[in-house]
Length: 249
Image (tube, rainbow, N blue to C red):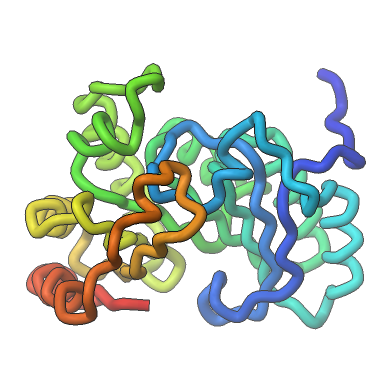
């Protein structure tokens, strides 16, 4: 197998973050490449292969930063895009762990086989996993995947994948996992909240975020008005009927 080049720009490095890894001052690396196309995604430069922003960093730059901040930062987040698809993810995990960092992975929850393979390897198993859970499977198959996607219309795939990924994360200690939902108007309804509530464990940390109508993958979503605080809290109150750990970030 050909070695991966460390001088190729492959993602965006955030040198310091207080919010991306609960309980840790951390760095984050957002890798290019994703298997789905959320219309409200604001990281479109990382999702679309034909876009290559000027601010991309190389793996070597990431390693240099980790070495420089050793003993100051305690965590490192690998996000995307979808990091489970990226061949650099295992390389980054091993290097960061050698330097004493705790590892957090952000995943979209649609690749249970890859998630399982990662956590079954003791050298690669993340210390913390955050899984996006966006809406019901039917909307994954019709809205999250556009008509050009090979996954378009595959309701059964997404229903099975989401459940499998949730079940995998159930095996993690409560303090080492979370689920995340963006309150996108027209995408996340009361029915979606009820579906997700029934899927997650009762002790889940369920983190909600407000939709941002800026730089969306689908320009039509830039025209949407985010939920009002009252509308957001109505959905979160519904979620709390089953999941006490449902909060608005």
